Image 1 (spheres, helix red, strand yellow):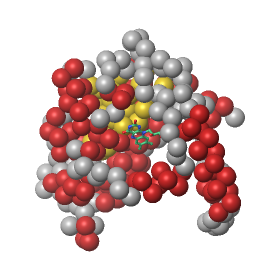
Image 2 (image 1 turned 30 degrees about the horizontal axis):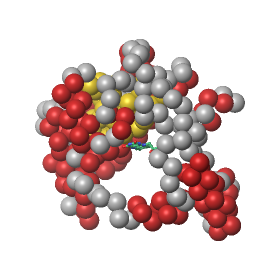
Image 3 (image 1 turned 90 degrees about the horizontal axis):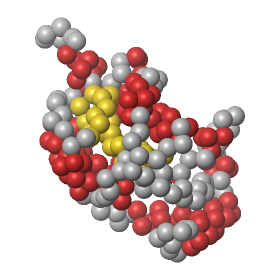
Image 4 (image 1 turned 120 degrees about the vertical axis):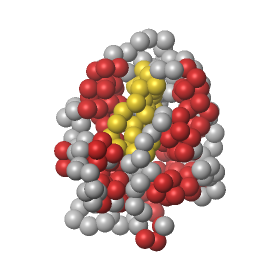
Length: 244
Ligand SMILES: Cc1cc2nc3c(=O)[nH]c(=O)nc-3n(C[C@H](O)[C@H](O)[C@H](O)COP(=O)(O)O)c2cc1C
């Protein structure tokens, strides 16, 4: 098996080296896509002032430097809707299923770009933090109806390669034929592995376990994320009844 897929680590600092962004855009375009509808759009950010505004929304370390390419992946059923006859009922392009399909397409494209970059000696960071202010992202990028900015991705040549973060043990994540039984001892071992990782890592070392990380997430600042349902509705996506 290709061992490159087991070598992943997020890269947040990049060398001042230009990369072949068109090859990465092509990798996004070539990704597997739900119903062959290709319900996503990719926007490469080139203007420094736009990048600065997105950096402010995201707050990510990776954006507080000039290096690396920044892409925004947008759920997009609007392009397909344009192709329908005027007056058509476009429910199948605006319902929850359509939004999910666009989210699948955009997310898989992100991962395909990242994996392609990693296979070529580059690295990157997925940026969910653009959702700290989705409405501002929509305004900044002039996103039309039936679109939604889902994820950012920074890609570049790594300045340094950090240690890999250990993942949950197989028996907690992988089931056979049914949901795996929770194993407290396996989780305790994993908490220890994460504690070892965080206390010994090169930068931002701190006491941390997986359990402490999960518990801290309960109090995470949601910024504008609780507005996502209302924003999706304003963008033309129908929300499940209970979320309206
Ligand atoms: C959907 C998604 C959103 C993410 N958003 C951010 C982000 O906004 N900022 C950031 O620095 N890292 C972000 N990451 C990277 C994760 O923090 C990282 O993958 C995780 O800590 C595991 O580290 P590793 O990728 O080095 O193994 C995101 C990853 C995913 C999959």
